[in-house]
Image (cartoon, rainbow, N blue to C red):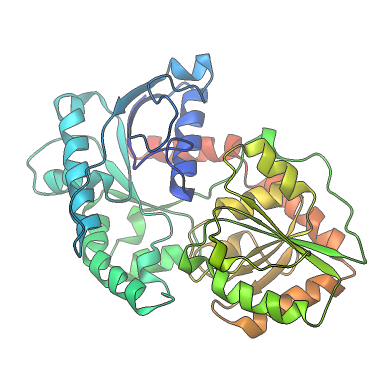
Length: 380
């Protein structure tokens, strides 16, 4: 079987949750001896031509097509404009060999041109699937500018989703969004994401009852809820001294809290260093306004952490009261209550163990790759 995977980059050449999912998707398709034409671009100092992050055996099944992501003068709607230009480049890169593919998997706007061409019957090819991950543009926005950006994106996302042959969903509230924008439920394929077995810890760290250890992993993007988190942390630091907090990610100085209980590690791309930090903590905090199926939660669970997260996207498929706390987005009262409960919890070890069990049983890439391949074969 041969698949074209049209992406907006793969990790670590481009950072992001979507890009990490794309990396593991191509890796595990190749592991299962599926030939993949990978369309992507580079936003790093790594040599993209070498594909060093794949094994020699995996590279036998990966044919990389490297493009440049267009840039333009800044103006309202520039991202949509440049995304369409990129989708045009991707279409041109594979248009002469469409007949060799058994399925075409597109990420976000990357298949825009291709999907439109097929919908208008200008081309003939296999089925095309689209994955917009969390459909965040249809979720809650933290501020006016973000809401405006969402409204700009919505009509294009809706149209592409309706015109695609298949729409991928992580499940939960994401599937409900896809249905609400007019996609036939029969065209929706629910497949979760996961982590590599190599990333999964064999043991969990024993929680220290006198000092609970929390960690935030991600960018300081507004929708990630760091403003609300900082507000709650400052309030709790004035009242408590029995917790510590670590931040992993590019947090600007104006959002850093100066306190000896707070540690900032900065941006880390090395997965083993991230695993090392996660493994020394008790609870991951993910207070986002909107999400899809966050890799940070999966990675934290794989390291045996309990989770505090907002009930958005498909997070409820990963987090419950058995392994953490689900709260409403943008609610500082609920966030503080969850943090306080985690500090005082007597069953925190049980929650940590449950996270690890869930990863082993449900959310690992060996299983997810098989699900994905079976779903794709069912479309042929």
